[in-house]
Image 1 (cartoon, one colour):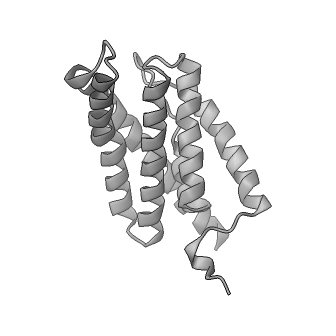
Image 2: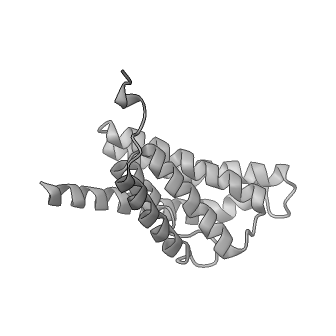
Length: 170
């Protein structure tokens, strides 16, 4: 007999919700932080992590970033945006895992740090490795504040929406 706690069961309902949340990510991808390509695309991914499960959230968040990159014309190159997509997916997964274990505030703080300063730092390093003209410390300094602020907005909105829905179900 298989232990159902070791994997997330795929259901038609979860796939349908995922599709709707990916569509909402596309809408969020159109709402960009002024002067940057940073957008409000990740809230549906963070929400999916706690509503549907961390794996679903990772997929929605990763695709949400890819949609933002596509609507911006992949300004930092496709390899760079694939790396950011992986970081988004990882952050959403960790957020969901920690939140579901009952550490709600900690999950928000960890996700904001992962999606803000740590992702900005890794992006700066990768951009340098890829020899992009805008990279290293310059890229980090340019994106760390708007990325952290957008992360805060997306993550807090996702957890607040989840708690509101959860209270309505009672």
